[in-house]
Image (cartoon, rainbow, N blue to C red; front, side, top):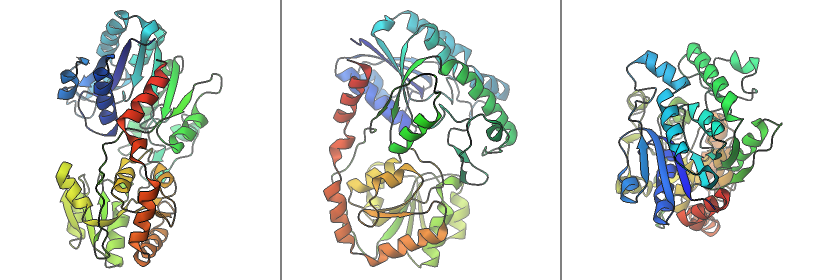
Length: 400
């Protein structure tokens, strides 16, 4: 019987999808009487953790990107010695026969040194595949300068020599070193993987070592979804929502809105915001939004356009839109396409292909939006993404 659950995440606060799942599940498990520990690198500590009795171990370090001491950041990213020592102390204090260690993220602060600790103690670990850092040096199976999906074998010579990093080739070489260090310890552990989509499941099975069997279980991330339904109007705006970066395909969205003389609404922030806001004054850029403000913008739209170029593992935005009864237009090579029945609950286009993207938008302009919304409502089930369902799945995986 599992008595102790250690949740591992780079950050002790919510700063994205992985952090949200890590913190929310830690709090919920604690509410249900489990003894939960949360091991993180960067403060501040989310109030929910302390309020629900989760015992937090935070190293109060900087993440690699924001550490002004660049030499320290480079070394810590490869091997975080403080994380190793503190994690070793924690594991040494527990009965590891009754302990599960669940990793959500580790590459931005904590490093692969933690897997050396789990190997040393022969601990049972679970890894949720929020990204692809278990296999790929840049975590995305993506060649950022070319905006193309990478199908090279990780750490093969074709991989090592490929300039796939968003910043520089020297950064890629550092990532290769980090991955080699990680692989040395990571695959010596007994790991139970959690895949969050069919795509992540397939990639996990494809790239894990064949000498040993590592179980992989499919489990949806828990989401806080609305039961409000959007009133779809023909003259409403097309919505782009998310990080404003190159791989997200913001340029395709903006060009399509202008070429087709349609209303465009961009909700999100990122380094491309000012550039595209200046180039496309016809499009409404409202910046980052959350809570009721975000909901307000969602309800002003008639369709979400999701022109991402990369292997999105389980884009939560698509599920969120479906909960509102809003159709989506998505690319065929990321997990978003798993959520859309082409022609019935939205449209699927060829990844990165502008003409295919525009054709899908034109098709949506011609259909009965209310009929498509009925299809979405009839096939979408909120309970599939509930915390209750997720916790039940976790307990099954933990073996309790």
